[in-house]
Length: 84
Image (cartoon, rainbow, N blue to C red; front, side):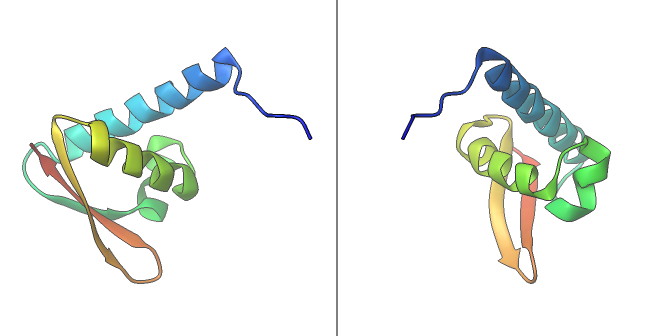
């Protein structure tokens, strides 16, 4: 078995996706709370629902300007986002 590592371009791509999602959420939540399911914003941010879900967990722990909460689960996670 060989260990897999990410190349620098993979890290840069992930960072770009992270920043794109963070900017989208900051803009949309600017006037108050935002509730969404990843599958419904996937096309708008150019990411898959699965990518958004993984990035939301990272954003929840590190985005200082946003409060992110896993709000409910009915066929897919609903996220609640508001400015910090």
